[in-house]
Image (cartoon, rainbow over all chains, first blue to last red; front, top):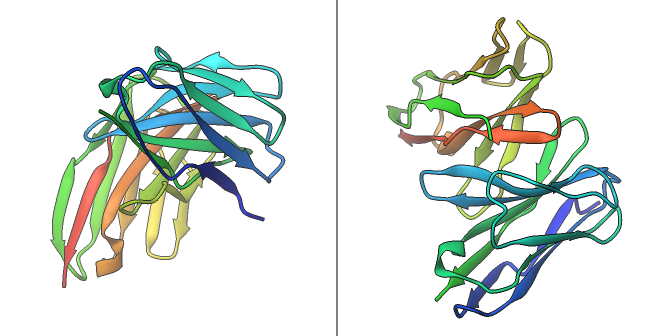
Length: 109
Length: 109
């Protein structure tokens, strides 16, 4: 039981490049989430998926898209990366409590 | 997202001292959660609170869900060096988990 896994752990992009952050959970949870964490800002919700086949915007969705591929997987895509998207990205899943992945550290130059 | 005000922002204490931090909100939450985050890691759940007035302990940690459902506190007794980290409160409303900005705790031997 690996919990919540994220890939990659680190990524450096140039402005305008695209990439997809992958997240998977093996706890059979219905709800999955993507957060970004910036210094002094805490964790801010980007998108969430309450169940397979549904996605909803969170607090800071602009510049991102998501796909709930199946119950296990929830990916986050940056179509055209910007320096303002330099951050640490956390995926999480929830049953009665929320479990976090180890994070992806993204730098956009 | 709903604003959570977490205080203090940082604490610098000596080993053996007790610590108290709290979170307030203008909104009502059905669940309060407290997380600890170590450098380079994702947040790890410490305590979950599900009922107004609930007082729950986990070893040296004690947390309470405020009667008004708009606040919560976390106490750490007899702090030790490994308590160092950032502590986050979070309130659950529907599917979205709203986070405070964190309390950074430093413990000197």
